Length: 248
Image (cartoon, rainbow, N blue to C red; front, side, top):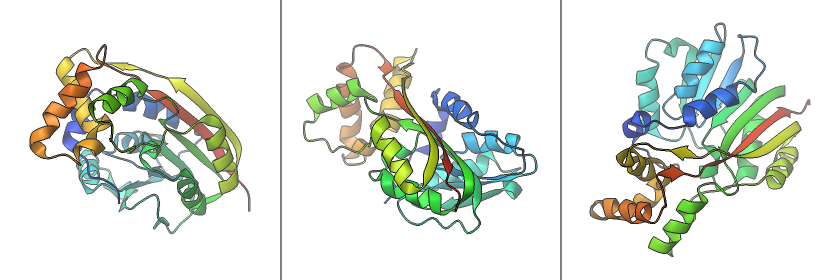
């Protein structure tokens, strides 16, 4: 079951996700008339950028979080005529009934435990030769935070799926993709304001762990993790992918 998010706080943070989104969209070759699936669209930052690239096309914005989709609808209120908004789980067959020309995803797939299923579900709604471009946390992502988390809460569940290059390549080939390109790129994010750093930890990085704690314990938990980090930096490592749906 997809988790809910504090979408307004998420949208207020100076996150590197916008930059990641631009790089991911730059991996697509578009004429401007395509239908593109934004898988794990969140609050619609990348959906908005996609609409700018698709003056004669449309976007299917799909996410599991109702709060994220509400924020997306508010952001794109004047352009929803070209957006189909779907709340769905990427681990289940997708309710997308017309094959899409491309799929993009930014900072979403590392929250999903079964990438084999995700890739098969995406391939099932893509036309032959459709493009896939995504990025997410990869092997080694937020390693310093994982270490601090283990010190604070040794029994903390592993809520992330930080995949590597070889496993991702194999999974995409098995799911029916070709021309697969996969890289891992360190991309640390420094926060100039300590409070913003702690808000990022609580809202983005550690949100799934906080969901398991009583409200009264959450701030202390974030403070305990932050105190074990040498500087206000999230040591991101990004898994960056481009591939093509094989012809049928």
